[in-house]
Amino acid sequence: MSEIEFTLKALREAVELTPNNFPLTQHYVRTLLDLTRYEEAESFLKIQLDALGQSIQLQVLMAEVFYRAGKNSHALAIVETLIASDAPDPSALLLHAKLDFRMGNVQQAVQRYKQAIEIDDTVTDDEFSSLLGIRTEEKEWSDDEEDDYDIDDEIIEGRIRIQNDDADDSGSMGKLEKPKIKFDQVGGMESVKEQIRVKIIYPITHAEMFAAYGKQAGGGILLYGPPGCGKTFIARATAGEVNANFLSIGINDVLDMWMGNSERNLHDLFEQARKNRPCVLFFDEVDALGASRSDMRQNSGRHLVNQFLSEMDGIDLSNEGVLILGATNAPWHVDSAFRRPGRFDRVLFVPPPDQIAREEVLQLKLDGKPVERIDYKKVSAKTHDYSGADLGAVVDAAIEAKLHEAIRTGTPSPLTTKDLLAVLKHIKPTTKEWFATARNHALYSNQGGIYDDILSYLKIK
Ligand SMILES: Nc1ncnc2c1ncn2[C@@H]1O[C@H](COP(=O)(O)OP(=O)(O)O)[C@@H](O)[C@H]1O
Ligand SMILES: [Mg+2]
Image (cartoon, rainbow, N blue to C red):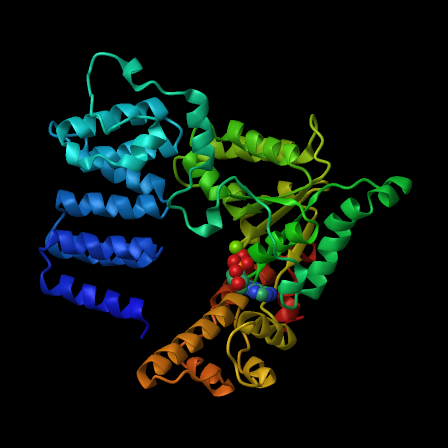
């Protein structure tokens, strides 16, 4: 057991021994949140709420879990009821202010934050204050004028755009980066790499050739497949490969953060990419855009899809030098309008790594680590169905075990084939579940043979 697991276990035991010790519960939950283990935090708190009743403290904590996990509408549902009373809870107000801010309602956020601090100034959150452009050190809170807060709208807009404090890494919202990884750090995926080269890299590196043949670049590639098999990874490597900027957007984030004015912001994102060309504009979780939305976002969802499509078509503004990649685990939820020519007109299956690719991934993951001669063939032969991420977890776990052994015995020794094989007992492949769902779609809604790759992977066809 790793040190972190050990600490968590100890904490959890302590909480279970003294269930009414709220500070301890809070500490445990926040520790989980800091480790981005949102689901664990959520299910743990659900149990607590059931067992101890819906205390305000526990409810606010639950809302915090949702907030940190990016489940904004869930968080909002809780805090809205909590602040509806005559004596609103200040922590709930603070959280509501943060949600307002995340959704772009800055004035609202300032007001609620101010109200929270008036009730109880111990809820002051310096980081949030500075995000709002409020000086809290002096604590000069007065009711009379809004102008007291002296907010520079432009600064705040800029900050909203880069603000991404709690989101997990799949949603590094609108952050421009220049990835260093290249295709050679992506194990296997030869055919995917080749298609990306032809469709989006050559038009940049051989622009004059394309021009000479009157061939226009354009359109994007949609990658789909089970989670953890390198879709996001290869998108980033594509940018690295051509030394381009990389702008990654999680659609769920766009929807959640900007309920209401998401259309305008989508335009801003495309603009940002156009201004920073060459730029790989990467849409993660595109299924969220096309999915039938059952919640409050349904109405705006349609607009957003249209906005997205017209931005992609680049009718008014050229998308030259903007390479569009999308990724999804659920391609069957992606609106077919996305797959027309000029849009995501290539749809590529990113399968779990085959045996040779697994060897490569393992080698990449063990690069620079103290290893004995590893029998990569043997390990890769025993890791059928493991995703790239699963293999990363295998290597991490083996190294961790080795480290603990070294600390215990006082003599470090290199990692062996046996060490890797030993952790396979605990770390199981995660792709099978995805294929259970994918199989049905491939069998029963395979229009135009779009999912033939899934069928041939499953050896059905
Ligand atoms: N082909 C691969 N080569 C090297 N590493 C990989 C590969 N596939 C997955 N990984 C590792 O697994 C992690 C998760 O992959 P990711 O791209 O996030 O999967 P997906 O987007 O398909 O869910 C990556 O950050 C990377 O470390
Ligand atoms: Mg991904």
